[in-house]
Amino acid sequence: MTTSGLSQPQESVVVIGAGAAGVFAAIACAEANPTLALTLLEAAPVPLAKVRISGGGRCNVTHACFDPALLVNHYPRGGKALRGAFSRFQPADTVAWFQQRGVKLKTEADGRIFPTSDCSATIVDCLLGKVERLGIGLRLRQPVRQVDRREQGFEIILGTGASLTCDRLLLATGSSPAGYRIAQSLGHTLVPPVPSLFTFTIRDAALCNLAGVSLDGVSLRLELADGQTFDQQGPMVITHWGMSGPAVLRLSAYGAIGLHQHHYQASLRVNWLPALAQPQIRQVLLDLKVDQAKRPIIGLSPFGLPRRLWQYLIQQRAGLGADLTWSHLSKAQLQTLVTSLTADPYRITGKGAFKEEFVTCGGVALPEVDFKTMASRVCPGLYLAGEILNIDGVTGGFNFQNAWTTGWLAGQAMAASPAGSKTSAPGQSPHPARNRQSG
Image 1: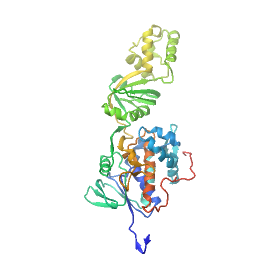
Image 2 (image 1 turned 45 degrees about the horizontal axis):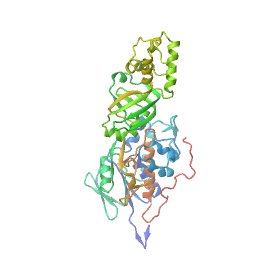
Image 3 (image 1 turned 180 degrees about the horizontal axis):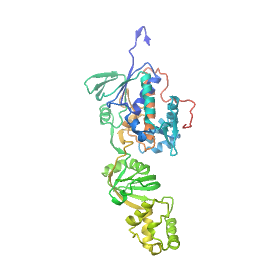
Image 4 (image 1 turned 90 degrees about the horizontal axis):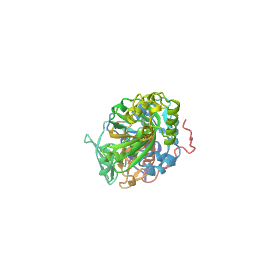
């Protein structure tokens, strides 16, 4: 590009963080404006670390929820801010983006979307292949020590002491303390980050002896000492340290801040039979007193509960003897059993790990970011995307969708020069004729 015969200096963009959001943003930026000099900086020795381990190595790319109004309900924090962003780039666009680049995807019964290869390398290879073909400079083992705002752009000081400059900068550093520190140094406010998506530690040896027992649907109520309550329903699995599974993980996400404030000490009530009301359960038990009068209660699980769990509930939770028959079940004992089946109390004593996906709530305050472009409202030329923001989703592909959406919007916006020349307008749909099928 020339003006009055003078060559204009090439504009430059630097993305700090080569995770899902950073890599996707860099690709979107380079595709929209090939004239930019684009550099990806990553402190780790390999890029896309979370993508590689997500979904047990299968990579849960996104979720088959294609209505932005419903999609935002899967984000304990950030859903309102993402509503408009999802109208510009949502799961249907993610599916189309990967499929148009040769990645075949499949939708599982619970709505999670994976590559048909069941291998995260398929997604990693697609993304890094695009980075290479677009000529994006990927620099690994390059931790950033400091970023200074200059009159024109930014100066980035690396851990080695070397520096580079750029016109526009994207922070996509996930939950890295270094990324938070840089954002604060550039004027942003930080909502204190705390863990989200974790399992519950419960000190009950008899329960933990049931490790591996899973249920398709339970109802959980989390009760904090300050009176806050949170409810979730869905699959659960008993572990050797307590409880896990989708219902527990979702509950941990919605209660993340309160649980942190109470040092992960809380009460939990489990309804093992959420599809049945207490009067229905009571009637089933009364019928058994007649029909199975001489049989031991412990020997028959009338509600389809796993046999080991039924025995645990009878003996450990309801306190009934192993030799008690149905005919000898008193009214008081029957009520105790009904309570154990529908409002079984436990004490959470800590949080466990969820190894497949570590998510943090908290981060850069959302009012300080323009969600049409992901541009900072407090620092011109700065953009933010992904988990550095105070956004977190429940398990099921929603956190990656936040990364793809905010990364794509940031990439499109950074591709536009200050003069306004661009090859693709920020916020414009990447797929004018959307195919809503998940493939």
